[in-house]
Image (tube, rainbow, N blue to C red; front, top):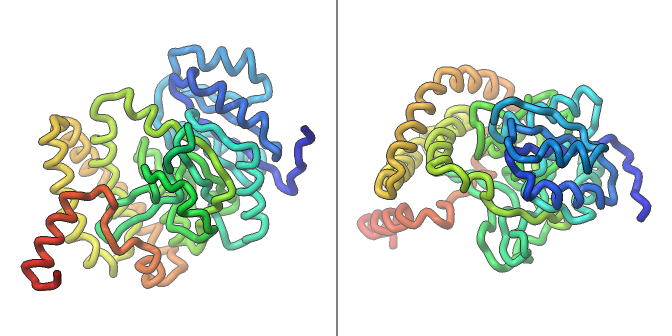
Length: 342
């Protein structure tokens, strides 16, 4: 098949940690793309045969090696930096357990080509077998809780209208390099989870749009990496939720968001303890407190560069709870009942 030539220079960055069992299928899907890109794998100190696999079977792939696991953000940023060095126009992070449709990159690049105001284009992510949605863009609620739109839903065609959205999943999206030069790269203090929401919010604050492009499709083995480490998701969630709030929510909105967030965070912490994940919740909270002074400093810089009105950020936030926030929904219904609202 003849590869379509792009008007722009593109790179794809794959962070990898002991993912050899998924990596081959991922890289084969990139070889089959109708739009040619420079592929970079950042290996996070793998102890399996990931490096040998790349060197022996994929000589066209640029390999960047770490001696230790630096997480998702630390695994993507060296690839982003390399894309900047190579003067790429666009760079796409892709999970090592994702498989890209052959036109995945073409649809994302075509959208950014046609929409100069867009800094990020998000693909549709489904489960590996295509039976359920994984993400059709990221949302951030007025409760200070982020979540992937559509996750777990069986109607995979439900969100098939192209639209602007608050955020893009870092597992399968395309970033404009000019935007990255302006707002910076992923926040490596997040390590894993929600650094994609953070960079999307920073992009929005700086005046860039984030678009969901449903024609662009990738298949993802949901949470394949996170499941390997007990308590990892709990620690990262408890750590990173406050960091998002502190860095990215404009001051006039904190009066609306913080009280809701405090209630949600307390329930989340208690639920983690109830499920036997108390130690990881405590360490996550301690790390959040440790990082707080640094994030307050970053907040001053981010908010001072804001180019959009506060009302715009309020408008693009989701004025509801995440679908899976069942305990909070019960509490809210009780509150409404006591207030005579419902």
